[in-house]
Length: 221
Image 1 (cartoon, one colour):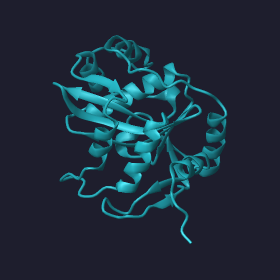
Image 2 (cartoon, one colour):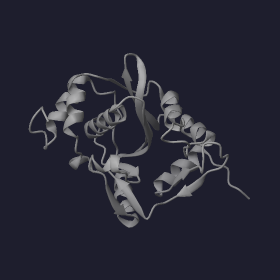
Image 3 (cartoon, helix red, strand yellow):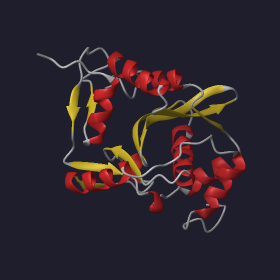
């Protein structure tokens, strides 16, 4: 007998270090994943590439939070020439939309000239944020969303940013891999603490956050 996947069951799974994926966008079912090596981005050693700092300081984008969750999910699930299929199916979209309405799932949106240029979404539980997916339609838009996310997490006393896996893209920001055992210890500690998911950072706050980066020695490359 198959257990119905509900938003409540989904949250319990995340608390045990397990998350769902679909084999393809059109698949009607999901499977559970618990990587032996987990990608995490240590907030204290978050590194922002110098070229990205220049882009953010120029005010090229506008950042918002939780204003277009459905659009961000659609952007993360859409197929492109580079990505002909995704793991986000309709069941995952439905469940995360429910969790967004419950105030648990969140999105960070990046806009250019009034159009959605990129963004990311994930879950906030305790002092942990589980990053699910990001997308980009304009160069540096998803990276800007990640910078804004980390700025908010630091401001709100979050302690764990779970990226699930590590990619070359995420490695540039300081993402590392830890064992499943280490991850579960960090996860338990993060879930036992409280954190605040707040409003989107202003341009001034983003610029101040960039200046806090220990590797920010100059404004030019």
